Each structure stands twice: as structure tokens, then as C-alpha cells.
Amino acid sequence: MNITGTTRVWAILADPIHHVKTPQALNPIMAARGVDGVMVPMHVGAGELSAVVGAMRNVRNFGGFVVTVPHKTAIVALCDEVSETVRRVGASNCVRREADGRLVADMLDGRGFVAGLRREGIEPAGKSAFLAGAGGAANAIAFALAEAGVTRLAISNRTRAKADDLAARLRQAFPALPLTTEPAGVGGYDLVVNATSLGLREDDPLPVDLTGLTGAQTVAEIIMQPAETRLMAEARARGCRVHPGKPMLECQLDLMADFLGMRA
Image (tube, rainbow, N blue to C red; front, side, top):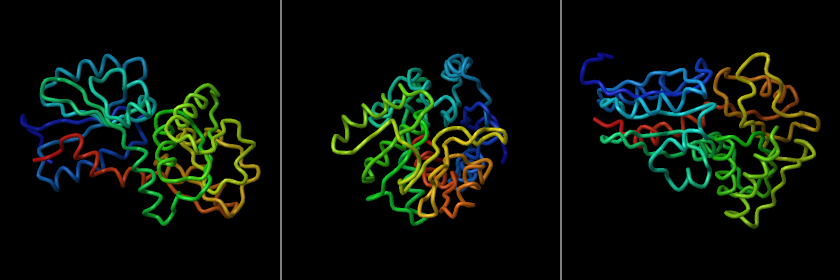
């Protein structure tokens, strides 16, 4: 990669930043497309997000950013234009900078997650699902699972009000879908999804109580680093099929590159 004065720059914003895999994936895509560009990681805390985003509006060779934990919800209010998916979900993971400095947001996590499941032969249609989390990625995945045809959906979150808010928006869009924010546990659900950040660190607690988990269930992650989280290891030991976080990213890479304007 030859970085010059004509190189366009994109970034991924996260806190922590060590686990991100998007630059390693998008930089080769840009190279293959003949794009004079580079994506770099930027370690930005929640308190600095507004200042960083405001400053990047004025960087003329800046193309935009991918957004991950914990910024997917907060970034929405800092953008000038959002897609219908962002409006419905309340979160974004891709923001494009236009030539005039305007910021345009979209959310691809949900589509990527469901596409990743299907690529690995896991069809969510007709299955019951348990979702841990109610943050930005969890919101996107909840709507995508509903659109994919799950038969019922349970949402569990440490802050009950967030789960209730997500459920209320889902009920408006999918009034026939049975929903609960007070699941008795993970038992009885075909698909158990961790859409929280618990598992990024070695000392993180499990995101769900595994009591009742059986080998008939599939346990899916959105975390990519480590490749196998403690949740996945515990589920595998119980005979479950496990699905890692990386397919969610892999199945949205071309969509990300196109939306962010990574074209020669």
C-alpha cells in the first residue's frame, strides 16, 4: 500500500479497539477495486465521539467511518441524513462523508447477521429466537430476525427499559410476532444470540444464564475477537451448534464498501 497525498482515508471508531477486523477486510477490497484509500482504527471513547466526528467533517480526503461498540446508537444524532433502517432501528454502523461534509448513516448489521446465518446453513425462518442485548447491533439483529420470519422472539437486557423500548418498536412493525422482554431463560429457543459486548474480555461474565441450554439449540455470537468466546465454548461443551461473529462482518463487506464510496 502506497499512501500519498491523494489517498482517501476511512476509519473505524470503537472503544475498545483491539478486537476490530474491518480494516483487515476492507483494505484488500479497496486494493482489488483499484481504490487509492486506506481504513485505519481510531480508539474513541464515548465522551470524545461528538468532538471527533465534528472534526472529521472538515477533513476533505476523509470518506467516512464504520462504527462499532459502543457508538452505534450515539452516532445517529451526529449525522445529517439516515436511512429508513437507521430510523427504525435507532442505530448505525456505517457513516459516509459527502464532499460538502454532510454525514449520511446506514445500518448493515442486521442484514449481515442473517446473511451470515444462512451462509452457514442456519435458516432463522420458522425458528424461535432468544436475543441477549438491546444496544445498536441488537436492535438491528432483532428487526432482521423478525423480517426473516422467526416465530417468536425473547429480548433480555440488563436495562429492562431498553428491551421494552426495542420490543415496542418491533410490535409496531411486526404486530403478529410474539415478543417478550421477560424470558424465563434460554431453554426452549432454537436460536440463542449474544448481541452484547460481553465476551470481548477474558474476565467478562457470560451474557446469559446457560441453565436449560441443550444440544438441540444453536448459539450465535456477534463478537469476532476472540474467535471463540467463553459463551461459544460453554455452548459447544453442551452439544450446541455454535456460530461465530465473523460471518456477520464478511456478509456485509461489499455492502459497506459500496455505501462508503470505496470506488476507483
